[in-house]
Image 1 (spheres, rainbow, N blue to C red):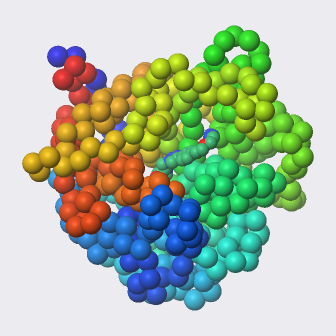
Image 2 (image 1 turned 60 degrees about the vertical axis):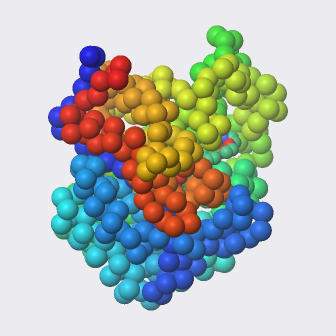
Image 3 (image 1 turned 90 degrees about the vertical axis):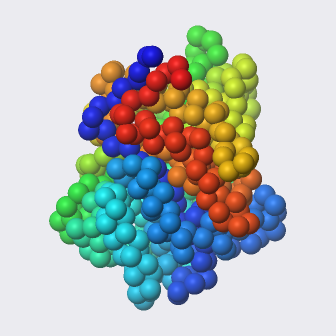
Length: 449
Ligand SMILES: N=NNCCOCCOc1ccc(-c2cn(C[C@@H]3NC[C@@H](O)[C@H]3O)nn2)cc1
C-alpha cells in the first residue's frame, strides 16, 4: 500500500457545460447559439452530430444530481446557456431560462453540492454573432450585462463564478484554426477576439465587485506543457512561443496588465496588431479571486520553420495517447502548475478541467475504463507534487461527470466517469466513477491498486 494523500480542505468536483449536456435546444424560449448553427452546418461536426438533445440533462438533471450526490463531490461546475437567459443576446430576459437554472441550482444546494458557474462556455447567442460576435465591442457590453444579471439573480446561491472558459479555444481555435464555432480562419480577427474576451472578463469582474456579491470570481484558461526536444535555443524559444499562445497571452493581461512582448513581437511579424483602447488594460487587470486551470495534455516540441504559426513542431517520442489521440503527459501537469506559481504567484487555483477521452463501452452493466483510472492517478500524483511545491491548489474537478457532446468531435469522444448511451440516454457508472468516489471519500488513493 502506498497512498497518495491530498489536503483535507481540498475540494473535489466534476465539470460539464450547457451546450454539451442540456439539449432542449429550442425549448422554453431559448434562443439559438453559434453552436446550434455550427453543429447544423454540414461538415462541421463529426457524423453530423448536434446539440439538439445532447444527453438531455435539461430534463434529467435531478437524476444527474443524485449521481453527483452518491459520488460525494463537494462542488459541481456547470455553465449557463447565455441564449437561454437572453435569447437575442441582450434586451428581453427569458424568465423560463432563469427559472430552469434556479430549479437546478436549488437542487444542487439541497443535495449539499456547491455550484461553480461558468458564464461563457462557448455558446454565444447567434443574434450577437450576426452583429460581429466577439469582434464587436457591443458583445463585450452585452456579456457584462448578462453577467451582472446572473450575479444579482443568483446572489446567495452561487458563490463561485467563472467568466470565460478557455479563451484560447474561443479566439484562436474557433477563429484562426477554425475547427470550432463560428469557424473563421483569420489571425487578426482571432487576436481582436482574444483581447475582447479579456475585456469582457474584466468588465464582468467590475460588475461583480460593484454588486458586492459574496464569493469569488475567476476565469478558466486551458494550458499545455511543451518540453523542448533539446537545449538548443531555437527549440526552447519555439516551445516558449507555443506555450505563450495559451499561457502568457491570456495570463499576462490579467496578472501583469500588459501582453507579453515576445508574443506581441511575433504576432507583429505575422502582420497582426493588437487593437487596445484607452482604459482596456486597467479593466482587464483588476484582481481576481481564483484561477481555473484546464489541463489535458502536452508534447515534446522543437523548432521547425513554418511547421505552425510559431515555427513549432510537436513530435511523437512514444508517449501513450488517449482515444482522442492526445499525448498523456502528467509530468507536464506538474511543470505547468509550477510555472504558473513561479510566474504569477500564489493565486488560489481550482483545476476546473482534467480528464481523458476513452471510449470504453458497457459490458454486462459495467464500463471497465481502467485507462481513465490510470490517467487520473497519474495526474492527481502530479497535482500532489505541485501542492508540495507550494502551488495554491483549492480544488480538483474532473472533466467530465458525464459523456457528452465533445464539440467538433460530436458524440465520438467520451470524457465522462459516467457512460451515457446516446440513443437511450441511459446513464451507467464507469469503474472510474467508483474509483473517484472512493478517492473523494478517503482524501487519498492507493498508488499501486
Ligand atoms: N495548441 N495548438 N494546437 C494546434 C492545433 O490544434 C488542433 C486541435 O486543437 C484543439 C485544442 C484543444 C481542444 C480541447 C478540447 N477540450 C475539451 C473541452 N474543454 C472544455 C470542455 O468543453 C471540453 O469539452 N479542451 N481543449 C480541442 C482541439
